[in-house]
Amino acid sequence: EMLRGWNVSLVVATFALTILGTFLTRSGVIGSVHAFTQSVIGPLFLGFLALVLVFSTALLLWRSSRLRTRGSLDSLLSREAAFLVANLL
Image (cartoon, rainbow, N blue to C red; front, side, top):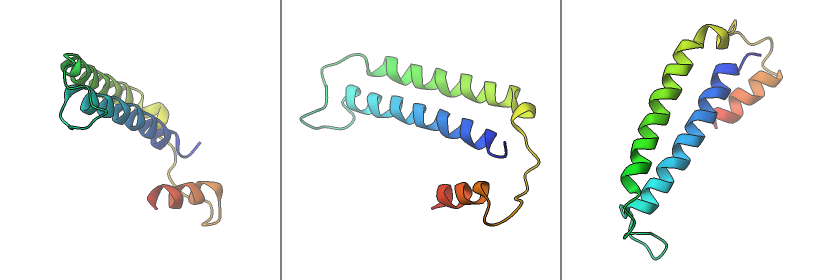
């Protein structure tokens, strides 16, 4: 219950970074034997990335009241504290 907003933010960040990696590979920004420099789909991925970020941010702000929790740890040895330490490391 405590980490709902954090979990949703991590899901959005993971998806956005996946799209960013696809853009970097397909657009020819990074030159490599595995890059597709002749592809014209790079700008489409960049536009899709922008759309995903705008839509996700708007959705997070719209639903922020439902994602908000009391925000205090019961104990330093609780499950939530362990997740917090793992995410910070």
